[in-house]
Amino acid sequence: MSEEVKLMKGNEAIAHAAIRCGCDGYFGYPITPQSEVLETLMEVEPWKTTGMVVLQAESEVSAINMVYGGAGCGKKVMTSSSSPGVSLKQEGVSYLAGAELPALIVNVMRGGPGLGTIQPSQADYFQTVKGGGHGDYRLIALAPASVQEMADFVGLGFDLAFKYRNPAIILADGVIGQMMEKVVLPDFQPRMTEEEIAEKCPWAAVGKPKNRERNVITSLELQPDAMEQNNIRFQEKYKTIEENEVRYEEIMCDDAEYLLVAFGSSARICQKAVEIAREQGIKLGLLRPITLWPFPKKALADYANKVKAMLSVELNAGQMVEDVRLAVNGKVPVEHYGRLGGIVYTPDEIVEAVKNKIM
Image 1 (cartoon, one colour):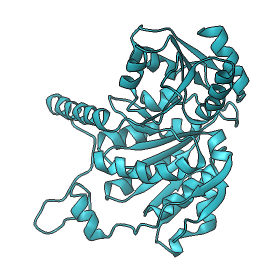
Image 2 (cartoon, rainbow, N blue to C red; image 1 turned 90 degrees about the horizontal axis):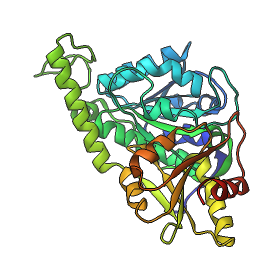
Image 3 (cartoon, rainbow, N blue to C red; image 1 turned 90 degrees about the vertical axis):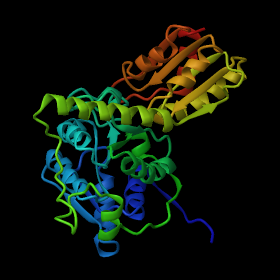
């Protein structure tokens, strides 16, 4: 059977992939530039075909707490928003992490701080990768660079969330959310039955099953010693994720003397910049982190022994560059190049930044 290729926006791909991946429930609230996720779900009406619940909550706070409730029952649930909306969800995200509940969050970033602009940005790296809520927790963070990856990362995000009982986030930006490309959507997966949930998610709160106690879902622990043990267990889990789930792409890095590091839409622009630089005799390569957490620290540390300098290219004032510098540990110079306010750089601008900042 031949693949069915469709033309759609990145936001639309998120919605269609969620239905096909057996999502039980979506709870969200409109905000530019991600509103098409909810709009597409309302248009397709999956509750008539798969039984998926789609609900526009009264606020972002309500939406994330609905996700908490669904996840606590072992359901495959998700939400999406853009930067200010994700800020409002942060307390609920921390609760999900503290209760060890699997859930998928989508952030299609826009510029800030505050209401900022509806134009694209990558300035939520700190909020997502460093943990915008309270406490010592981590989110598995996937950074798509195409509409195809927007679709693919829905299934991957759910798989990782359930594998580690930890929230996962797709950290996209307005460019990827709004652009249109060809995409092959995933095959349909049935939603889990109650029996499958009871088998695969024995921790879930599903009433009082026979022959075992009722599960209580909470992140509260009043005894300091017990809370410390919880946190130690969390850190061991995060260490396991770091050892097993790092993902990145290398483009023309074999003989590179200079290295660009970029994610999302910036990586696409950097790929063209690498081509232009090569035509000018500059041996430039690109490392694209696909998981922003766990971050590809080891790969960058290895390149610190091979290249002369690195340039972190981001649509922000300099956020991921901190992790790049930590990874290389001073072995090579690391500079940052970015644009702010929703202005997207061109490949030629990046080549000039390479010449001016790291050569």
